Image (tube, rainbow, N blue to C red; front, side):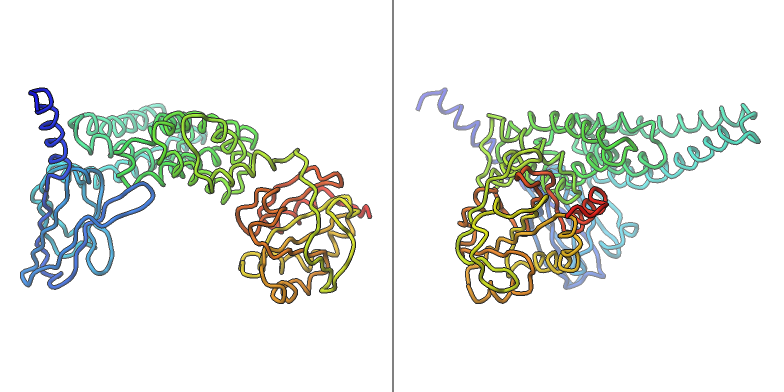
Length: 466
C-alpha cells in the first residue's frame, strides 16, 4: 500500500472513530433510585433510543452518546416526562430532584446545555414583556385619550427595541460553530408564529421569509426535533395570515418552490418530507396546495419518488378538478337497496346532473362513518340532481352484500380489492376516497368528507332541479 493510500485509509478511520466518539451524561437524582432512564434522540419526524440505564441506590446514572447523535435529545425516567438536552459533543453533568421538574435540575457541566437553559428561561420572559408593550402601544396609538402623549409612546418604542436587541445580542454572542447558535434562533422562529400571527402581524413577511430560507435537509434540523414544527408552523402562518384564500394558495406555492430544490439533494428526506407536507395539506383541506405540490414533485427529475407516494400524488395530477374522470364499467355484483340489478352497465349510464363516486369498504371504519352520515342526506341530494355510486373494495360477497344492503344507491363490488379496475383508473390509494363530477364526468370537487359535499349541495344547488 503506497503512502497516498495509507493516508486515505487513516483519514477514513479517523472519520469513523470521530463519528462514534463517546460522550457521557452523568446525573445524580436520589429520587430516581432504581428507575430506568433513557436518552432519546430525534431523527426526522421520529425518535430513537440512544442509551438507557438504571439509576443506582445513590441516585447516580451514566448514559453515553456519540458524535453522530449531535442534535437535540431528551432524558426520560419511568414517568416518560422529557428533560431536553443538547447533544453537542460535550460531556454533561446534571443533578436535581426529578427530570420531570426542570426548575429543580442544575447543569454542573456542559457549556452548550447551560446556554440552552439560560435562553430557555430568559427568552419567554422577554417575549411576554414584548407582547405587553405591543398591547400598550396599540392603546397609545388608537385611543385619543393617550395618543397625544408623545413621551410615553416614545418610551414604549424604545423599550420594545431594547428587548429585541437584548435577545438578538444574546444569540449573536454565541460561538458560530456551536449547535445552540443554530438551534436557538430556529427554535425562536418556530415558537414565535402564534404570537406574531395574533399580536405582531407586521412581522409576518419576515417570519415567512425566514422559513423559506431554511434548508430542510440540514442534519441539524433533522436531528433537532423541530422538523415537524417548522413545516407545520410555516404553512399554518400562511393559512392564518389574514389574506384571501387565493393569496394564501399563491404564497403556499411560493414556499413549495423554495422547499423542493433543497429537498432534491437528499432522496430519503425528499420522500419523507414531501409525504408529510402532502398529508398536512390533506388534513387541513388545502387541496389546491396538495395539487400544486403533487405536480411539482412528479415533474422534478432529481429524485425518485417512492411508488406508494407516487400513486398518491398522481391522483392529484390525473384526477384534479377540471379533468374528465374515466368511465367506470360496472363488473361483479351491482346492487341497489340490497337487490341485484342489471342496469346501469357503467357510470355514464346513470342519468343525473351530478354524480358522487365513493370508494370504500366494510373493513374501513371511516367509510362506515361517512356512509352513515350520507344516508339521511341522500334524498335531499337526489332531489337536487345528485346521484351516488359506492364502489366497494371488499373481497367477500356475503360481507359486501350485508354492508351495502341498506344503501338506496348503486353499490358495486368485483372482490378484487386494490386490483379493481376503477381503483387503478382513479388512482385510489386510501379509503374512503370521494369524487364529485357533473353529468359529463368532469371533476368539480375532490371532497374529503360527506359533510363537504353537503355544504356544496346547499350552497350551489339552492333550488330543486330534478
